Length: 226
Image 1 (cartoon, one colour):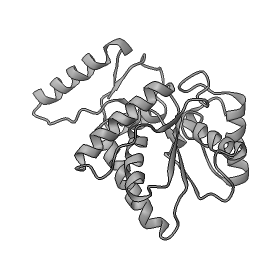
Image 2 (cartoon, helix red, strand yellow; image 1 turned 120 degrees about the vertical axis):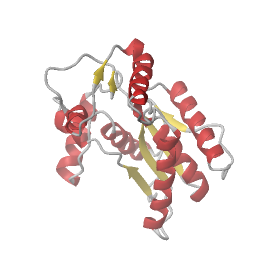
Image 3 (cartoon, helix red, strand yellow; image 1 turned 45 degrees about the vertical axis):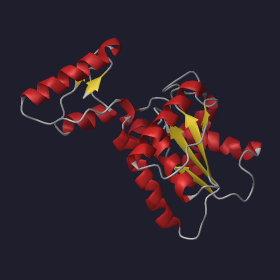
Image 4 (spheres, helix red, strand yellow; image 1 turned 180 degrees about the horizontal axis):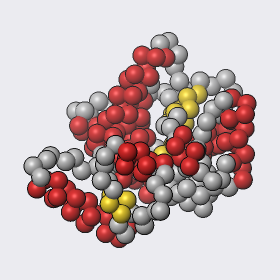
């Protein structure tokens, strides 16, 4: 695993779990991540292994395909219920791309509301649309690709992993009133946006809304903000 950061004195969160499973952690400067990953691939191949190259955030066709399959599972679980909106945290775009393709195929009248946790609107949309095209081609074009998607960067704050008082208040409220555990990096920002969409009328009353919880318990436990 290549990590663009200095090696911490104490491993926490995902790094701790990765190390526990026996994964090798290599710390590197952000400017040479690609070279470091290429070197790691060469090292593994020299050992006779067949490693799979996965970009940060799981940004690959396998990642987007997994969420396309997740929409198919969602359709089975919902039965006769037809969703009007799906709200999801969106980072590198792979998760949202898979959901978008699945929703366009199985629920064409449903709108996916992607909430940025890392990128500005232009970069985020471009990445999602690119991943959607790649997935659609892989699936032999089951949908007509849209020219635009919803990717809202208003709830990002000062950037990735950055928090703000309103976000933390929403996370505490969700835990106390609903027993819903959210993290400040991903799901917290998406749920905070979802609440505001309802208050602003972007999501009308009586709509069937799905908040797609992509996890983040480890981030919550390791956060010093909550």
